[in-house]
Length: 141
Image 1: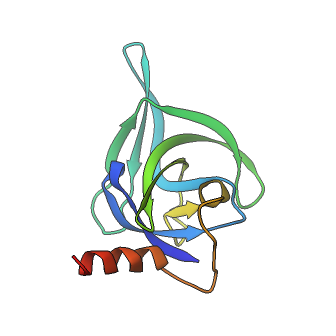
Image 2: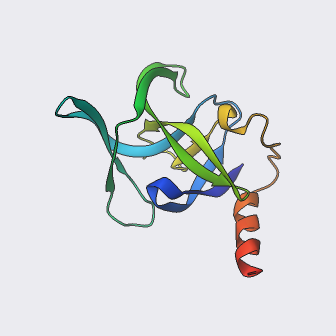
């Protein structure tokens, strides 16, 4: 199941996301992820890739963590994790996203069980339900 979602903190809108109940953690497509030092602080730097053809935009966060994530092939890898807001069905949810290079994958965003649990029921026969709700709200105003 796929949908189009918004990330207001990252200025990304109508981003295609795959709902994956088999994945525990959600993931966000980016490149050039690295930690840079600014004085005594460590800052996470990464490039967000927008599928609209615009150039990649740099983002920085001083609130991040790193953890082992098992990828779709079952291989454990260390990934950086950020918290950001996502809008689904008109609800703004603060959630964790691992930063991963998803260039070879169809969807730049993966929504995992941790984000979905106790919030949504997944109907795999449906598509773009959150986006359709968003459009109907905009059209009714």
